[in-house]
Image (cartoon, rainbow, N blue to C red; front, side):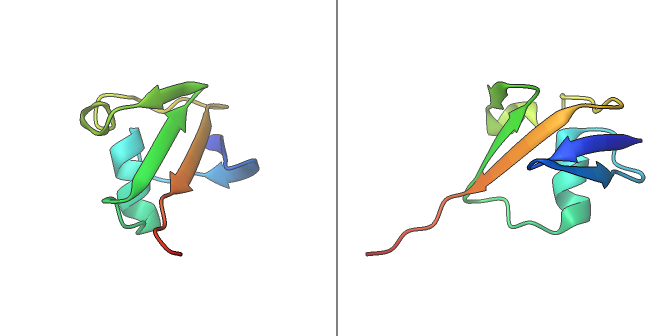
Length: 66
């Protein structure tokens, strides 16, 4: 199944929800914001949001600094 991930087409493989996608990608979760099909998700919603062909997922890493 293919989705649009941060503006690029991506084959999700075995990931069936947003949390599984993040785990497959190996992205550190603590400082991450996720939007699924235009809706900003709370962290507890990641495992509940099923992925479907053509979905759009945007991820933003929060970085502290000066």
